[in-house]
Image (cartoon, rainbow, N blue to C red; front, side, top):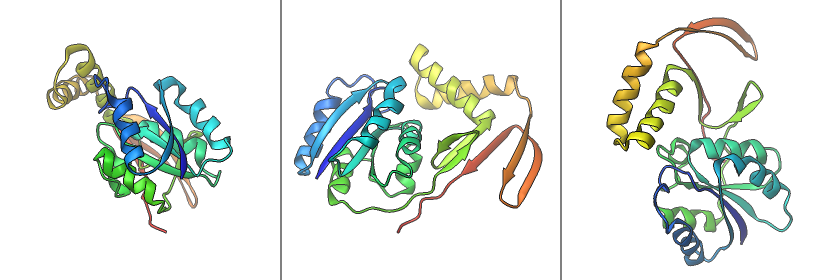
Length: 202
């Protein structure tokens, strides 16, 4: 099996780990996979995935990172017929958990090496593909502030989320949204809107 592995070097579980590239390469080598590993900055993920989607001779393209990285990858790979592998290297890894991908790096590499596939749903909001869920309003505001607290002040995730929640609630406001789907069109006012897709096994 020949795959290209595109890893977001800023993924939640990789920050501050200088041996990440060696560990990932070793995991795939141990699983018997010929992996073309590319450590990539967040801003370059989309272009790297677009290139991989069109590259000849690949059995699969693997994305390593959190749910944002995976959504970006899915947006480039959806409809191409190319298999999409997941390395759960983010903070929460919602999609990987929904799809039954183990959090352990070596185990995830073995799952990819096994070559079994399942279908997952993808959806689109304002022209942008997403997997698992898409949110507006209070929740994403809290996540952005939490990450700032962790990076700038070195706080734990739990303490950073508490501080971010208090800051977000101070600037609480409702959003006016227009929801459109087959058979449904409606206005809605909400502090936090969320759309969700579900993974399904073939």
